[in-house]
Length: 137
Image (cartoon, rainbow, N blue to C red; front, side, top):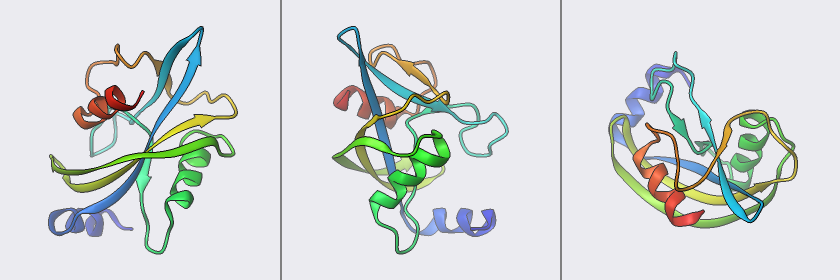
């Protein structure tokens, strides 16, 4: 979708996102995977976030989860993906989103992103992502 069309849609309708709280356990402690947006991005440059993507026309959430695994994380698929909640994110600075959250696990290691303790996330994580990690992880 051209950026101008996307920006116009953000001003008039809520868009649906599928977002993932990816966890693993190391030595009995839970860790969560965050990825960082490029500093050149127009929306949220350089910010840490849980991986996610927009639901496209005629897609199912499983299609979006597959795309996140392959394109954002470079892994074939998630070994586990359980629906946990949804949020009506209407106070986001860039637009109104309905976000569908899944708690996921990876079958293979990824070199993209970084693992953090859910209680020690880096500064600048999107506020609603910080809240959902605290509730889910």
